[in-house]
Length: 390
Image 1 (cartoon, helix red, strand yellow):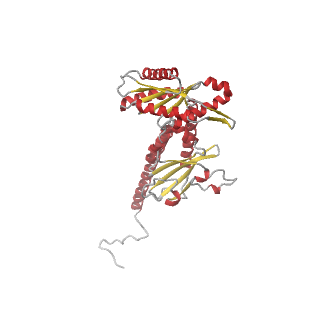
Image 2 (image 1 turned 60 degrees about the vertical axis):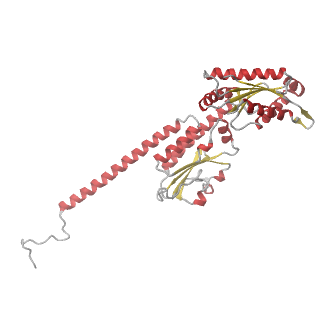
Image 3 (image 1 turned 120 degrees about the vertical axis):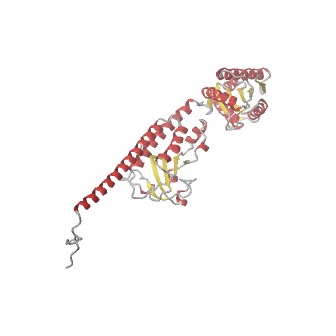
């Protein structure tokens, strides 16, 4: 046996230094605790951000605010590369109402509408009595399969989660999440968190859409389907302010169905209602989507034309007059009526003097109403126009 110079044997491999082992274990424990603490802080930060997000969308006052918050905030707080939203809108009711309320869908390229449940990219066929609703679908991004849910997918998208939006056991759409991290959404990942998030979003969507529908009903004439006076009064104030800022003219038509009492006396109030609906439709056919048509009451209508001077407004008014008078209104195979309208047209020029918007609006309406009176006094079935003085 060989001895060392100190006369001591070297430590046997199976007899490690206890102090060294303890120090190594302490370092490992400290590293583990630091990692857990970092994860806890990160999770707390994520939870705090999502709680703030929940409060933001719950407090959204209208459809654009809600959709805008989802698309602006969710990708940031969840560190996602793509977020889209697919809504079922069978009869285009949502789109129709939102357009009526001046929602600009081009502002939300991630908002997708489908007509049927089958168009959602969810495996609904897996549903049965024991599984009342489909679970979120997580997995690798497939460009062909997922194109409807991610129409503008960013380059490098790797994994996706398609989360059903459920309300009262009914699917109203899906929340679609995408990441360039291939491990972000895998089939084995727990889905409780994203299901909770989707449920909050679904509740907010249903509430906001319902409120917007009620708002639309409150601003719409139930007989003709066009706007009512309440809407045009509000819209006119907004457009006067905008026209002053952006320096463009707006024009207003006041339209009245000629001899409407005679129509009611001839065909009854039911027939008169049909006439009003047809007249409203013919007026609307001559307008741009940026213009607004409202029934002011009885047989009177008002049209607000945006960025239209007196000459162009009078030209449109003449088309409306001719469109109403040009063909008979068919109430039944054996009953047709010839109907005409008189129109007064006033313009608020870009050089109109500054002043209270409400007073300016009232004066513009009164001016158009006075010109309508002139059209009737002049023999009806005609257009009389006038430029609002600066």
